[in-house]
Length: 341
Image 1 (cartoon, rainbow, N blue to C red):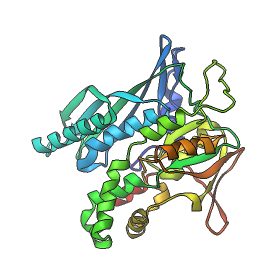
Image 2 (image 1 turned 120 degrees about the horizontal axis):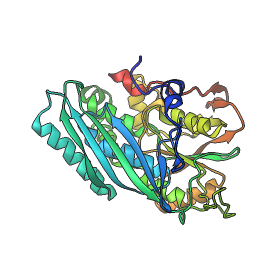
Image 3 (image 1 turned 180 degrees about the vertical axis):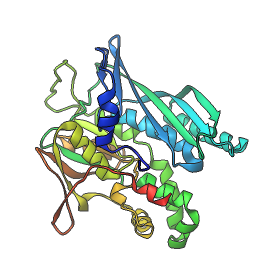
């Protein structure tokens, strides 16, 4: 099989369709496009998500903490703690292990998240570092609920810019190649993007924005103005948008020209032969909402860039290009990053 995440179809056929039926305690379980599980504990819900980092090299400690915490934030919830599993090849050194653990500790500390356990192992089952984190948060019924499904007519907001993580990884892991095409300032700008990989702030801002009509869901929970949110990871902006629409049982129309891309990202993507719209992009959050101006206003108050890049429709997956022509928005495949392996 090809390298990378399973396609949505394979995920459904090989994994999801074979899992046991969920108990009544699980409010939200595994689905294509949904990254968090909600498990009822008393009057509250434990929210959890897990992710591996397999191509982060010697920055995997930082990346691993952010990717799982971003999933919790995309459910509109503050991450509180996480488990960390670090698998290292026999060629790993003591100093490398210390570096990765120190990175994870610093990233967790910056987010106010406790590392509460995990596992560390040297194994010849891997030939490079693999770090898996499982993050946790709590949701209380007195908080607005991000329902997890977009509705027809909802706008699609994107925070920050496309391919932040992919730009950083390409510059960091392929330094010599990157330096041949970038100025010293551009190279520094690319590396500095590691400081923008968290979406915890924007996730909490969007989730805390209530609907103006104070509508409630069938269980009586107050609904957030954010109908659904999804952090942009493997598959890039296009992949995340497709997954959101699929989970919602809807179509989507994307305005390609509206998607913000940094000049350094465009330069790296062009030189490396990568599609920035399908390049891994932790640090950007997609938000479906019927009240985009309200959420954009709250994002601006926190100095977070937000841009409307599309709309959810009854059916069809389309991208309108700069010249007005339309093309199909296809399901996510292997991330563009794997072209560099």
